[in-house]
Length: 437
Image (cartoon, rainbow, N blue to C red; front, side, top):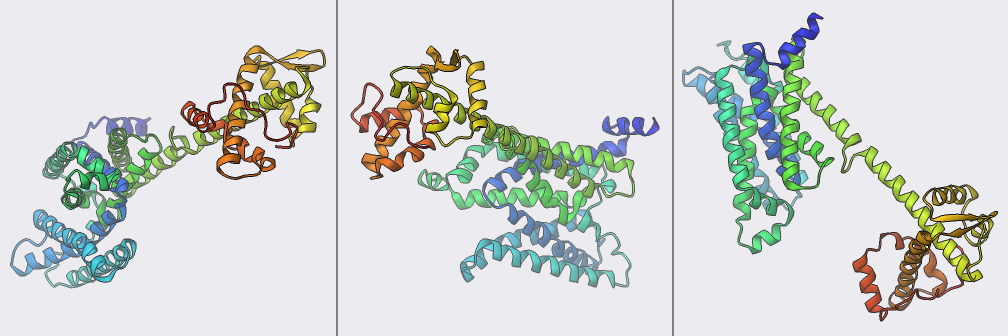
């Protein structure tokens, strides 16, 4: 019971220190999700990883410089300035090396990322051997230490996040063009390079203020994973940006709250694990691209295709016999289907009243005939199109038309009718009706 109350107090921000940490990381997650969504859409997600890892040598170099000048080596503002300078230089290095060497983006980014982080680790080793003994705590910039966040940090994160969000909202139309139609934006006179630099600058700001919370290694998760989660739920730019921000804020709230109940667990790692959990849930249950919904949509499409095949086969049986009832054996002898699939489709057709029983045989209902004639018409129009314009033999078009007839909409049908001189009634089949499918 005590643990439950402790979790409830944590989630409700009853404690001042908890309130500072949770609100600070949540605001950071919100801004990271919004900016990260545009990085992901722009296909620049790895650039954030490069910038974050390259900030480590900047942090350590700033510490060494301040120590040499006699200042407080671990001045938080000074360390953040060093991180910002190093991250900006790394971001500028990527396009410069690309133009100079001709290598692809991923190779250049890998070189800058590895080189920058290696330099940072080497400088960290130098700092740890200084006789002053004032270098302890620098390694927290690698993994983060959100629990040490104070009210001044919360104010700094909130101000930076607010400014970044305000600028991002103001440039939303320009960023949308940059992400989806760069060429069109260039034709309209949009400053592509300036917008790229602005997006990079926002990313650097977010990474800089997030160093203390999750560290240089895990900050990239706050930029990428929320946007990846949102992609499973929507295809709309505005909704994706909003959802990405909410996922980032929610994961930070939940992760840092859990970390307060397990003091030995770092808040940054718990936050990233929370984001990963959100990603797994979105990957499975996302209404737009989630695996479960995709399987359900494929099953519905397969059932609809089977039902339309049955209606077309029934209509062609009635056409060939002059309107006489037909049996499942008639369908089986004329089509390469299994008995179980025909039985399953017949059961659904009876339940939907598209087919009626006539003794031990079947006949299409009025609604069933209307649907069947539409499917037959789509099928034969596409067959004629393939014969006349794709130069495919009439004996080979049946199976090809089967794959397309279920996705032809009214506009395509109208174009087919215009190409084929608008046939008022169903075209006759260009091949024997009882050919196999």
